[in-house]
Length: 314
Image 1 (cartoon, rainbow, N blue to C red):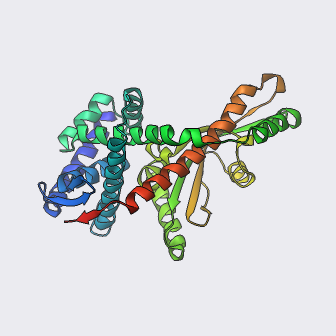
Image 2: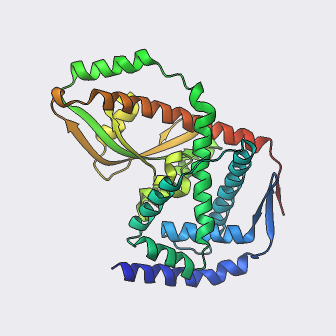
């Protein structure tokens, strides 16, 4: 089964290599982001990597959309690279990289060595992809270093929620959730964007949609945000999660400038108060609130960087 799947992916990408290679000049500089450059080779590599990991088929209708998404992703990556260099930030994330590789190999139902061979056979620069993943992890680390001390959680509110859980609930619900957060630039297009995301999820799955579209830091993990105690959720999000069936996803929860899709991966209950792990529940509340704030800081920092950076297209 693994060999058949690899063979299918390889044949598929070999077929598209010809059309993409003719659309892109491998040696051309196509954009400059501050002091960083983007080459057509990088863009080609990004497109082919996206197709490999998402399983999406390429055609005349979607090639421009895929190309633009890949280019925007590279622009954001170069902005992050500049900030990492500006702060002279370094951190060893090899364990996280190894976990990421294990995750995508598992999704493709191949071993790690087979994954590397698939990249090689399909003329995708595996090392370049790994460097991009390392940059994403470094960016997350950098945002934490810059903004974590600015996060001021309401301890009284956390304790209030914790005490309410212990006193009033004998059955504590926990949800294993995944998310897709979409930035909305034009409110008149929200219905079209929502339909596009839903169609993509139905065709390729929630994880691949999160990888491709989500602006949240969880996108790199297919949108997976792990187990969340019901007490850590807002009332609106709790009601969405509560009414979802395992494996299903919600419609878009819209706000002023974004929309959120949720998928219920699994759920469980702690049936006995004596078995409640109070520290775990409290940490879950703190972790959720912290990650939400860090995600906001990340998006704002990147937007500010983009506003002051000269981006030229060649």
